[in-house]
Image (cartoon, rainbow, N blue to C red; front, side, top):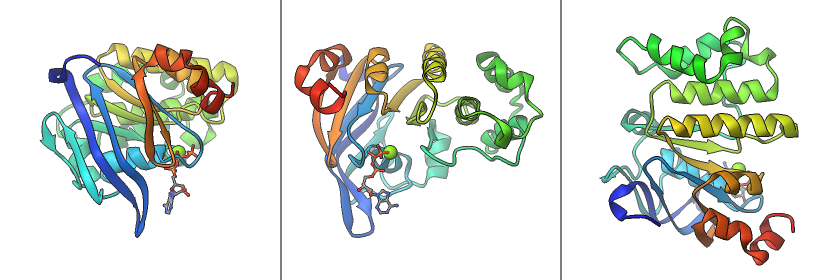
Length: 239
Ligand SMILES: Nc1ncnc2c1ncn2[C@@H]1O[C@H](COP(=O)(O)OP(=O)(O)OP(=O)(O)O)[C@@H](O)[C@H]1O
Ligand SMILES: [Mg+2]
């Protein structure tokens, strides 16, 4: 891990869950400005719950979420998004009956300035979306839908992007394409917390990684070290 000065997002000993049931138990993670950090772990490990707890969809019972040295624990998603964190949920992350262009406009709903230059930057990042900007998002392929969801989240020019399984359900060729776009987004300076079931590919692209299981931190460190760990490979990377 690099110098602590560079930390942009920190989850500190956080316990959170749904009503009375705790799912995350004392989970801690850090994200440095500009880096990709991958969160992996088996189904039900609490990966999506972690992102929801960061983004204020769940109120942690214990612990803290710190963004740019400010305590944002328990703040509403509306407030958190204004501070510079965007979130692409695992499911239902686009408006199918709206066009691509309208979906991107929805992403900018809290912007009071002229966002047309940002819109152009997003279309430059995802040329496929530009071509089909007037098509209804519901008519798109899975890969294109993910691009719409990411584009929408990027409209606010976030410092941090929380991505929940962007490659889920996509054919291998599209998985590579989505990962390429994630790298492109990162190269514009956006730090990312990337939850992925395609754990090998995600770790190969990340600087650091965290393994979660049954709502607890199991392992973290340099992504290449995690990839090279035989025990991790056997348990979490399919051998
Ligand atoms: N809305 C909810 N209400 C109650 N329990 C929930 C809710 N959402 C998830 N859970 C439970 O929380 C646990 C963790 O779920 P979570 O979705 O965070 O796991 P995950 O690591 O993202 O799994 P996956 O890889 O399948 O996406 C699971 O046992 C799940 O059943
Ligand atoms: Mg999940």
